[in-house]
Image (cartoon, rainbow, N blue to C red; front, side, top):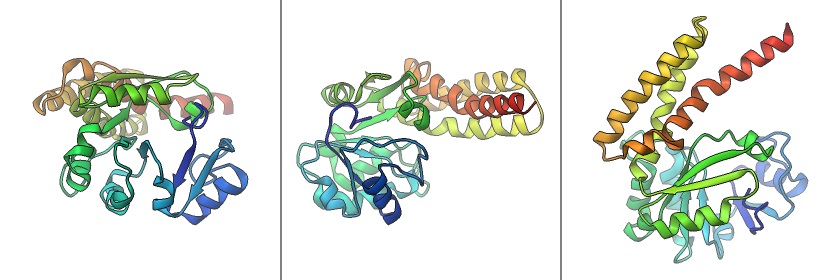
Length: 247
């Protein structure tokens, strides 16, 4: 999406097959099968090379690997760049949100410019031009607006807020409810049960987030309710559409 918006994009991966796939065939057969990656995107296995002259650095590693990735890139991050997290999760060992991990590894200056990108967004649908709305949250309103301006394009609309706690927790804790929704479906229950789970799950998520300092409106918006609904129903809707097709 950044490349479609006209940016020069460099992708770092430790997976040599992914690097070769992006550079040779402009696809990522390991993680996004069938999607055409713009020719302007280049991949590398050298993290220093990927970070040269970077103005926006988008983290898309799993939460359990984020600290290791940050430590590996720390020496190469250009001064003044904005770290943008597309990671939805909490560090297992410490219970810290990604912004807190960034503060630990990169320092408070980087943490102040940190932006969390979250909301209801299946990657495959975004690249297929399905209309999608997400949130860029940051302590620094100017940093959030930069991300909004530079990454919003065609089908992707980005809103901003200053509630980093609520946005990060919404994108993380909703996964617990998604597992429960899968259990509900596996037991053979229908939409009534899933709706009850989502509604009461949102109430529990909101109480937790407010206790941690989040804002109520965040939990009622894209980063809370929106992401919860998508994660709890997206897979179920997909499965049922295939069931109908098979019939």
